Image 1 (cartoon, rainbow, N blue to C red):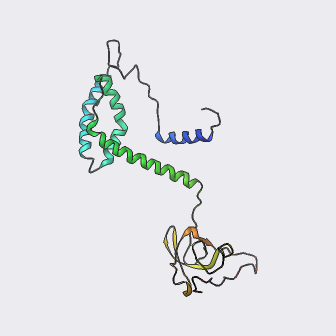
Image 2: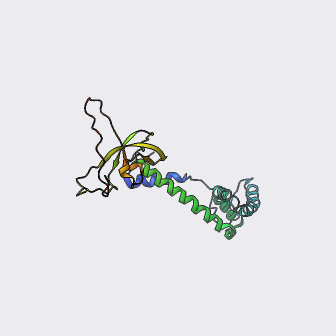
Image 3: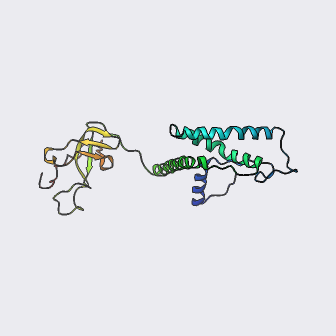
Length: 222
């Protein structure tokens, strides 16, 4: 293994290529050409090639018919053995197999798999710099961000960054919580995304905990 330090671009390419599980297979002779009198094959090579050629076309046709019921079945077989099958077919008959019969289905399944690979790759890169969201229980006190709250303060810069705090009523989903608002805030929907909530941290030092601030005036409502 090389001890050379990879650049950022080289590291990214190496990580992408590692997902394809590439392997190098040694093939004796030039299998992309027609066999001639000087070509040498193993004793059982012809039998294995004929058996592969006789079985795979029928299997592919049957898999095409079953594609509407179970599309992934055809794609799994074609991805595992189709490339080797084409090499065997061309080396045995000296011509390329006509794949128009099932090329449309193969491309459709190939695109689906590549899209899923891209989605998983983006998720992995995004989660590297993303912290786990906090988990709140009913009754926990949280600060509400004033980012989307319109108040009567003269300027947004001088208004509070965290409002109240408010108690948690219930968990709506993994990324949203329902808050208990005072009656003055009845015009605001009480469900907020978790990125707008911050847990209230209590200090162990006596007389260091701040008292809850009164509710700000929201659209002429206190």
